[in-house]
Image 1 (spheres, one colour):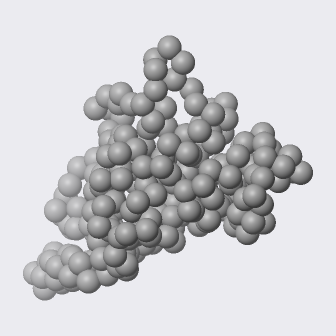
Image 2 (cartoon, helix red, strand yellow):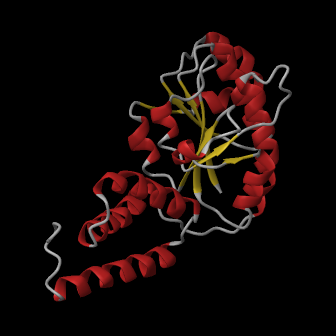
Image 3 (cartoon, one colour):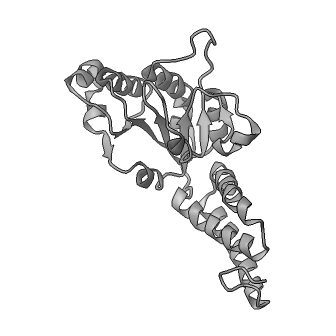
Length: 241
């Protein structure tokens, strides 16, 4: 499993160092930093995990970075989502996420947000699944490094024992969704429902963690449907009345 720990706009340098330290504790080394405040204090708290900090990937565009991943996991403190917020996806607990990934080897990035606010809504939308650490309602807010430790503890076994497979990336899922968009227009699917429907389709297909072979077959079926409609003279890239 190729798993990145991606920190989003952490402002406390010591927290960044503590995250590097717990990563090394559990055998993870791919640290990604997006607009984080790294300083000498980060290296002090990293202790013997300074190499994790030194080799961290610095990204300037979060969306571009995530497009190369097979699965994007967002961390959140919200565990009760209404039907109207289903676009934010179901929330896994750490052990459930570990079970979901069992026997698979995708390229994963786990996003951890700001100390005071977490991930913004636009960043949540970039995630395929969410994970939340169950805590006491009396004091539910965890330090980010503690949350990282809990998650990596649950995921550490899968990092060492799962088989290597090649899973499709988000950019390839986007290509599949573009075919679905064409088909929805052809069958006169209500236009006001198309954006949400496409987003749901993307979430479902991303969570499926398709292999290259599965993706090729799936895409081929969708393409054949499109070609059949074209032969019937009902498809020209736009809706026909």
